[in-house]
Image (cartoon, rainbow, N blue to C red; front, side, top):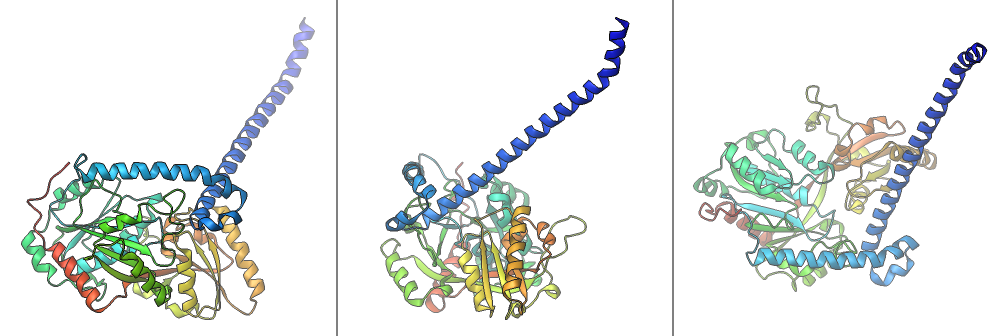
Length: 464
C-alpha cells in the first residue's frame, strides 16, 4: 500500500500538469471558436447591410442582375417595408389628430431633416444655420440624437467651438431642450426680433468676435434629423434631398431608402437640393418640375453644395482632455496640395460619390475609391486593406505621390486609428455647406428665417 501511495505521489504532478494543459487547451479552443463565431457573425451582418443598401439603389426592373443573397432578401424586405409603412402612417395619424401631443417650446424650432436615409447634408445644413444665427447674435441650441457613435455630434462640437451655441445629445430632445432653457435662459421675443433684422445668408460668419456677440441665452432651437421626430413641434421644416441619388428605387425602408412617402414633402417649408453643383443643370430643372406635384405652392426650393475648404493632417489631441480641437488656421493646408497626385478616397458616408467628384474637381490625377457603409467604424482589418490598396497604387503610379484622403466625419469617428497608417500621408478634407441659389430664392429664404426667429411663441408653448 505504501508503494502504491509512493507511486501515486510521484505520478500526481504529471497527471496534474496534463489535466491543466487539457483544461487550458479546451478553454483556448472555446475562446477561439467563440471568436470565430463572432467574426463570422460580424462579417455576415456587414454583408447583409451591404446587400440592403445595394437593393435600395437598384431599380425594380434591374434586380434580376443582383447576387443571390440580394434576391433572397427581397421578399423579406418587401414585407418589412409594408409593416414600416403602416406603423409610420399610424404614428403620423396619432399626432395629426391630437391623440399624441407634440411639445411646443417657448422659442422657435427649426427642423432639418430628410425623406431618405444618409448623404443628404442634414448636419452640414445645421452647422450653416448655426453660423447664420450666431452671426446675428442669436444663440442656437442644437438637438441631435447622436446616432451611430455620435460622429455628427462630435463634428458640430468641434466646428462650433468657441461660440455660444449649445449642443444637446440624446433621444428625448424635448426634455433636453427644456433642461437647457431652464439652465441658460432664453432670449426675449423683442430681442430676437431686433437681432433677426441683421440675419445674413451671404456667408457663414465664423469669426470669434461675431460668434461671441450673443449673451448665451437661447434664441432658437435647431432640430437635427427632425422630420421623423414628431414629439417636438417645429415652426419651420427644412427637408434635405440628395440631388445625385434622389429617391433610389422609390421604396420605403428597408426595401428602399425612403423614410417617408414622397407625399410627405408637402410638410416642407424649404426643400434643399444638396450636391446640386455635381448634377447637370437639366437634371436639376427636371427634379424641380417633378417636385411641384408634392410641394405646397408657398414652399421654397433652393440648391446647395458641399464645398471643400481646406485640408489638414492628423492633428494632435488636446493635452488636457484628450479630445479633438478645431484646426487652427496655421495648420490648414490649401486644396492645391492634392493637385496632380493619386488619391485613395476612403469614406464611410452616405454619399461617397460626392467626395470622389469633388476630389476630381481639385485637379487630382487619379481618384481611387474605397467605399464603406455610412457610419462605418474602421477597424485594424480595414486599415490593412487600405494599406494594401495604397501599395498597389504606388506600384501602378510610380511617378506620382499617393495620398490618403478622408472626410472629417470618418476621421472623428476613429481619430487614433489613422496614425497607424504608414504607406501614405493621411489628409482630412474639411468641407462646408454653401447655398448656391441666389436672387429672389435666397431673399425669400432669408425672409422666412427672419420671420421665424422674430415670432412670439410664449403663449403657444406647452404640451407634454
